[in-house]
Image (cartoon, rainbow, N blue to C red; front, top):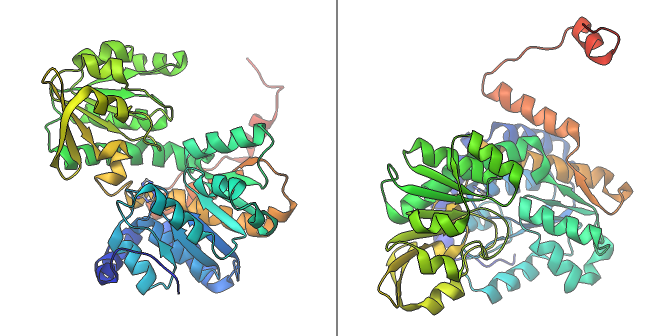
Length: 418
Ligand code: ADE
């Protein structure tokens, strides 16, 4: 079996980590039980480009017991848990190609390896598989039934491909499921981003000015958790609606050019580029800490920071100290890559349970229906989304009411009024 991981000797530790994560993934586990019985993915070839974590390990296991031939590569050079990668190879016999800290060339070599078995279904987190297939491996298109996409940034890229009529196979936007973005993006990113910043720095958040760039679901989550830790949270936005929401949620809202003068910690979660650039670094306070939790490492202009600096050194495991020409120091965390995965362990399993239950169900949907679908970006079917919400509530021991026949009739009618 082909694979490329850091060290198979790490496998035992990775296996325990997967087992621990699995304890918090009851919805995915119940899908796994069904898959083990029915084998609905028998002989389907799947290439997955996802963060290689203990939660992803549980998803890969689920697809494999469903009968699929899965190959896995990382969706970010810094997001691999090397022990988990080793465990998947050693114990699950899944070909994994990823090593934490790999350079860009190795990252893409690994993507090509994951495509080595001519996949029928692709699973992306950021659309790197889709873009590689569409630019460098168009020979694979003939066999491909469809793909899934995990994250906001990937969905934006794919919708742009569809709009420009270059997309060549249907995609299901897992990110758009309510049981995904309302929980994973908000509570998952919220907690794990703060976790990453704390592991990287061990600063006390209470009393600090904590600047969150972008008030989408991820930004909302980070702002909420930073406020909970006692920070004074400032939001920067370009969208007037989101900015207004941030104001009424009780945050200070201002442009980045004003926030840079007072911020102690900055986190970007916009999905766009150069959110913090040269002019911003020039105005930052001595000791400012800068991190990114958006998908790509383009939100912070690292070349500009480097150009403004006379020296830099690694001061902690996930923190670099840049000394600017005027003597000020700025701290960049996790090389500007997703700080929750670069310095912490990504979203907790309890929330990935729903995201990956959506992934598993959408792969099944593609295996069954994919050949009949038009080439466009689909939302997750409503029945899948709702069934995952119901299952999650059930596993949490939460019961809810059901509409009575009278209530259903009332909602469906228009006659009854004042
Ligand atoms: N994205 C964010 N957190 C993650 C995790 N724990 N596993 C896989 N993908 C993730």
